[in-house]
Image (tube, rainbow, N blue to C red):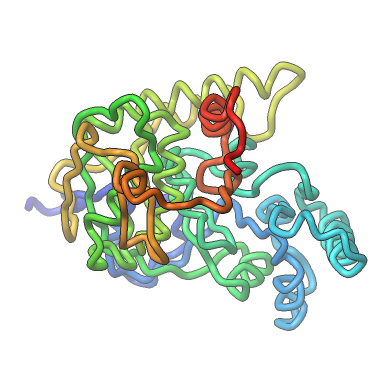
Length: 353
């Protein structure tokens, strides 16, 4: 290289680029972030839910006196909302009082599932790095936001300092080909991935979803798949910020800004994103690669007892497996599209005796 010429950065995958955007300092490493690096990052936001109470205790235990950036934490009460006992209501009131005292955004019990609130209200935004004190924070990857879980002590430390350390995980590439057949959903995709690649192939990895099949998946389906990369063993699961994601974001912006400018999802934030969309470089490094033909995915259920075991609906029907209870509204797929499908299936039917 000629003297004075900058040394070109090595190709980076999407996960590495999203981490690089959040880096506070690299501890002497090169400007390019790569798998294995230990970095200090400033997450755009940190979610806590009912576990906000023990995080408050840890925050006080470490001697912190102030929340460094009150707009960084987000409190959403969503786990134990059916518990109307005096003890639980007192805990909820204490969390709300703490939020009010620092000016932290607070969503009470009944407002919705925390991860969905994070996405719908723009706390998890494409191109950002966002954490939550919950294992399913991976879900934010469905809109191209690197979401990953942190433990309660780390959440408290982020409140106090705005930042935390993270080791960039190895990144696995999952190529999706083809399109889903009618009646097959995003949940079937991630159950199939968990069942097919069931030897810890992505344990403690970040997963990037690529391929022409991605464009056929709605944002709802992507959120479901990203959410359950947790059960697959991954630390995050990220989809590209493609036209499907961008269109969803623009529709969300139109809805949220009818009566004024939304603080996070607005024309300015979207224009900034579109001016510099993070994408994986050609020749980026991945520790492993897997391929799934969406056209061959069938409706499946996990188990018994573990997601590494899967059974097709046809197998379940042939065995005439009795179902005592069915639960719909978990954080993985309880969006309007999912509820509409369930409603259509039971419309005009009766519960079997």
